Amino acid sequence: MDRPATHPSARIRPVPAGAAIWVARCLILIAGLLPLGRASARDTNAWPAIQARGILRWGNDAEGGAPYIYHPPGKPDALTGFEVDLAEELCRRLKLRGDFVQGNWDMLIPTLKQGGSIDLILAGLERSPENLAKVAMSRPYYVFAQQLVVRKGTPPVAGLTGMKGRRIGVLSGTSSQRLAEATPGVDTKVYQDNVNYFRDLEVGRLDAVLTDGPIAQTYLAGNTKLVAGGPPFAQGAYAIAVRHEDASLLEVINPVLLAMVHDGTLKQIYSRYGLWNEDQSTLGDWSETRHVGEQHRSTLREWTTYLPLLLRAAVTTIWVTCGGMTLAVTWGLVLALCRLDGSRPLRWAATAYIEVFRGTPLLLQIYFLYFGLAQQLGVRLPAGVAAVLSLGLNYAANEAENYRAGLLAVPRGQAEAAAALGMSRALALRRVLLPQALRIALPGITNDFIAMFKDSSIVSVIALVELTKQYQIRAIDTGDYVGLGLMTAGIYFVMSYTASLGARQLERRLRHDSR
Image (cartoon, rainbow, N blue to C red; front, side, top):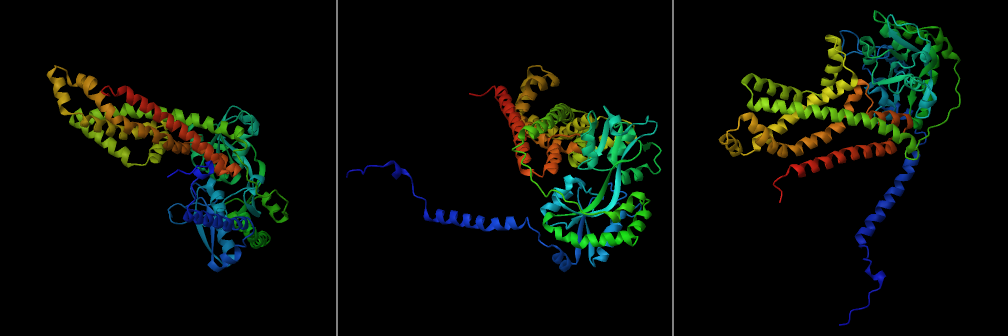
């Protein structure tokens, strides 16, 4: 039978009917969801839903949150603070039950915008152009100013301009951070809470702290080591934040706040905490001003600006990881040898070390090395040293087990042959057993090395800005989590894949018996 001529178009296989129907359904579903996505940008009038629920969920961060929100001494289950009192009064007047939701301070706005867990933020959030571009905000409920805090005995300084070349601690995502970073010559250290930068200032790791007036007032009270570094400056105001979609909720909140100003309720609340001052008299005269609505910036389009920032932070990730892994593989080998060939006390000590460091959180170990040693023993480790030590000492426990598994996997006959040749135990380990054990343990060590690249992000808690922390800071500023996330993920992939290729090359060089 003659074979029919084949036209090029005839080589294209027809799409099965089932697949075509499946694709069509997906397109219809996506088309149906698009209007919902557009509707989410409009006002959703959340007030009726909150009334029906009878609960107002407000977000704040109680970690180091005095005088805003904190646990009073002796009452770990209770909360107090002027914002707690303000939230309770607001809910009482709205005939609702308040429900406090704990969150990380610098992640409250992303949490609010995501929706579902909190209705509003009442957490010392400044009514600034940067925040107004991300969320809708109420009329101000407190007026504050920036305050420099220094160690007692520090010569007077002329505001931020007098801090050139000095290290200043700031809270992440605040106007303090923006002001410090905008001042030429200032070495800005970014912290995630209000407690640790004061501790670092006391022990000399910082030259000053720039913070909001209420925070400075609280931590200077009764503190003999710290003093105000000049008069307050750069006045601002706190306001309640809601999603842009829920802006109509402010039509309910604003009249209540204004009534609390006029009837003296706010003055009573702030006076309980020593926070009432002349600046608060302007709260009743405030009037709404026009502001630019929410704008999403595409960092992928501005990659020439943001990629260098991420790459500089990646350098910190690399040297912290490489330093930590160098310590881990070295100290891990010592631990493994002590556990296998040491005396009984050494075996017990090595086993205890491995179990303790594997059984306790890395974050706890970082806090102990960085803050605990400085507080109890006066050992003031730099942030970089503390980061390398904590990662290295923690991962050494894992590497010790990798080495031990490798040594136990070497056939016993290898050690017996070495002994028959007159080798000492130390020489047999160095020339016969360890090279074979290393080839066996190398995949596990490589895996830990790659894992450390990601675990190094935890060192941001001691004001070391590595890659993940830089991503978080810039994502909060720009509102672009996708573009920055893609760039950050790409950098992590390049670092991890490069380490993997290096490990494979090392494995090939160590594989003497390959055929």
